[in-house]
Image (cartoon, rainbow over all chains, first blue to last red; front, side, top):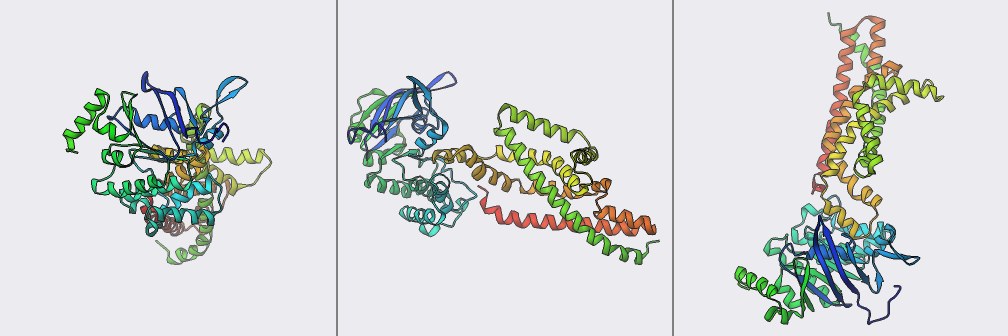
Length: 265
Length: 218
């Protein structure tokens, strides 16, 4: 952890990151910090750039401009004799592996069992011996309540169970931070609860998380801070209590009013 | 007249030649799978040059007769100092020819893999090669099992061409018997039954594999 200046260094620092797709700024000069152990929820209408911003962080979608620091280390770029150059892919991969990511569509590998899905990264990326990887994968699966289903293939699991396996797969790699990209949006309503319960448990254990979500209840209850994005910009940043009761921007107010009108929450 | 004794006499030699046919089919099938996987990979992830070479290979194989390809390989091997390698030449020629078709099958299957699965592998830090080897190719093989089996039966039915370079597989054995006792109908009836039996084995094997893999398809 080069450049780590101790506890004061935020775990994540995004400095004016922008992402352009086809002549459009999908993410537009977004800056924020996340401290170790913090849970940050990113809210906003669909198409506001939340997911893309999240994918910038672990370099799945390298930002077009701006800088991201993980524990003080600049991501994706290094200094070669005073000139900024893209980091070699091997090093980008190593940086990316310090993040865990959970996707809306779970993205489990259908040809591997739950246990094998979790073991894969431990063996292939971390280079663990099979036995050790298996022990660790079993432990993580039981942490998300799926010890009994470890030999099931994804197709045999419910959406909620699949998402919990996906969380276990990310957790097993012992990331410094977990990124959630709308983890409950593809789930039937009755399955949302079990996934949120796992995420609550992680939050209670001081796992650092950035959660892009439409679950306002979860954000209000679990988040330490809420980021509100609209049209690629970070419009508002506030503790959830303040954001939900008295948002300072008109856009956030409109967003909340619309949600209220939709589902009476 | 159909002579029963000639029919029965042919069974023994044709059955032992069936072993050669099986070996040739398996060797050519393995080469086909390997060449197909390579060509499909080059076409999808091999950059401009890889895609060009791969496309050239596919159109060359599809645009020329297997018979000619076999002669080129056989005499090409002889030119390279490996003369008289009839089995090797036949396995190579049939395998590389079929590889062009396997490549097209696999390319379609690769394109059908949801990009999210590749992203999930990237997210945990897997390299491109590992993603290819652990996520993309296994699933491409599983989902192309039915068309790949069909391709393997075509390989099986192409093996008689090996008689051109005097590999004594089933058909050539039939030809040799027929030349001795003028029993064309009887001998080739045995040969035909042999191919049907082998094709059945292939189909059944593939069905049982497919059943095993059914769960694994997303």
